[in-house]
Length: 208
Image (tube, rainbow, N blue to C red):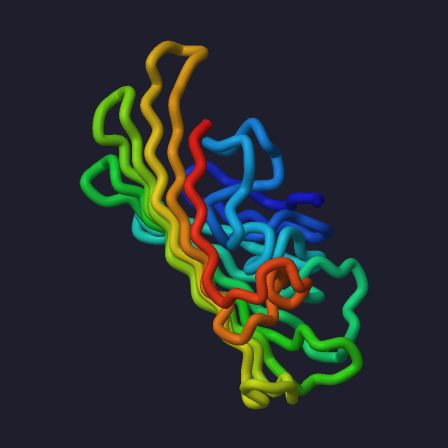
């Protein structure tokens, strides 16, 4: 993306182009994650990238880190309908070490129609207990309206919950853990829909 505008003390950034999502803890770039694999929520429940416009600025002497944006939707370069997707993010730090970040996405994600709006809310927290021990947590909820398919023709609902811990033994060696639960209540977001498990709940435990 291209960025415009930044001033010392009173900062505001505007990006136009293609950029990674604000949702979730894990990212596309593998070295920036604690584990070698990604969670089920990352792969099945949230978007990867967006194409559009995003602004970022600080409030209350940068206590709040605010994001606002308008884009073409989930993982599409060109919009596949006539309704844009709204995004917002809010980050802040409590007690000097507890960092919180909340995001909301809402818009039309169904090709060829403005009906069936999709809503996504993600909430993350990271905390450095000591210089070597850190923990993270993530709670996500999503709803796709007007899907028109059984068993729930009104909406598909999915959610994800994950807890992480990492201990940095040396500058080059760390042990990380991720415990996660992905709930696909209507078996519509991947594992069940693809016929792999036909399960609406998938639990994972990962060590790296």
